[in-house]
Each structure stands twice: as C-alpha cells, then as structure tokens.
Length: 264
Image (cartoon, rainbow, N blue to C red; front, side):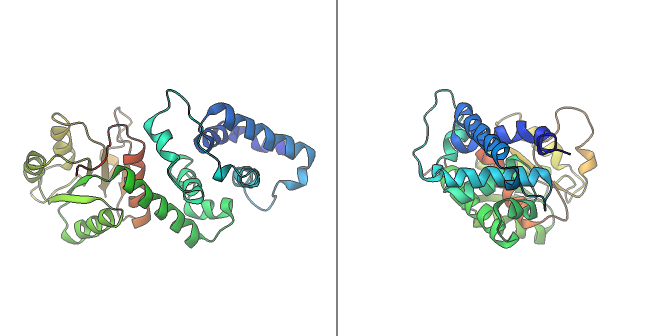
C-alpha cells in the first residue's frame, strides 16, 4: 500500500494536532502541507518500522522541530478558546506530549515512539505538562470516595499536580455538605459509596447548584457507559494507573472553559 493511502485516514487528526501546536488552523495546515510535500520529495523519510499513524506524527514533529517553531512567539487569533491560548504557556516538549496523550489519545508507549523517547521520559513530559497546567488553572478538588486508601492515593496525586483538596466525602450526604462549605473547581467521584448511596446521584445533585467539571473513577463503568446521553466526558476505570488519573485531571481542567485560577 502506498504511503498516501496509509496515512490518509489520519490526516484530519493530524490537522487538529497541528492547529493546537501552532495556534491557528491556517498555520497548522501549512505545516501539514509542508510535511506532505517533503514525503512526496523523499518517501524514504517515512518510517516503516512503526504503525503508519505513529509514523505520520513522528515525521510531522521532526519537521516541526526543524523549523524552530517551538521557540517562536505565539500567534494571536481572535475567537480562540482559553484552552488554546493556555497551550502557549506550556514548554514545547511537554506540550507535544500532553497533546499526543490527552487530545490524540495515544498511549504513553505510543507517545514515546512518536517523540523517539523512552516511555519513562514520555511519562515525565506529560507529568511536567500537568504541573505547568496546574500553575495556570490550580483549583480546589472535592474527592468522593469511600475507600480510605484509594482516597489517600487520589489526594496525593491531586496535590502533586499543585491542586488543593477541599475534603473527602464517603457518602452522598457528606459530598453535598462539603460543597456547601466550599465550592470545588473539580470533582473526582466514585459511584458506589459507603452507605449504599450513589456518587452519581451526589454529582447530579451538585450540578444543580454549581457548574463544575467531573471525573468519575469507578470499578463500575458500565453504569455510566449506557449509550444514552449525556455520558461523562472523563471516566477512569479501577484499578487505575496514577498517570491516567493525573492526565485526566489536567485535561478536564485545561480544556474546560469553566475552570479558572484558584482563588487567592
């Protein structure tokens, strides 16, 4: 199969990635076109030892780095979302890793293959991006979790990213009470709680009074992934990997327009 046919299905996604890196669709498309022209001129530049999608992003990032755009001034475009403007504040390599992981949906191993780094280095880049994001959108987090050890693990991850925990609720009633004391900027919620109450019901009640992004962390994803709308945008299945939870926290805050800076 020709290179053109192999990469064609992935070009719309690469355009999305290029826009996020460059700041505008026009600029992003220009760099995608430049990459395609380079491949036409020298097809041997396309790696054949990896999946075509990984190879496509690898070639693009090589071209991107060679142009020196990682150190250029950000392009100002009217009507851009806060998330797009915030991307400019991330340092180049962590920004690339963050977008590959959270927007394009690559695994850490795939991010490493694209960036030609070790999986440990790729994970560290995503972690750095999360810390830089927290500096921009650090917020107060409510944890709804009835297992003390799991709650402690989640609390540690939240604080490592630079956020603060308003409290840990073990029941629906406790969750509502904590929201009444201090409004959170993010909610991390289990579904099945200590007294038989529901974290889903707690979240639904919370959302009647405040608008806040929510990440569900649960061993029962089938209770949320019903095929009906709305379904949660952020869902982590137990047992979870800390890196996945941290990435979800950063993504939920960074790409949610409602998230703001932590109050002084």
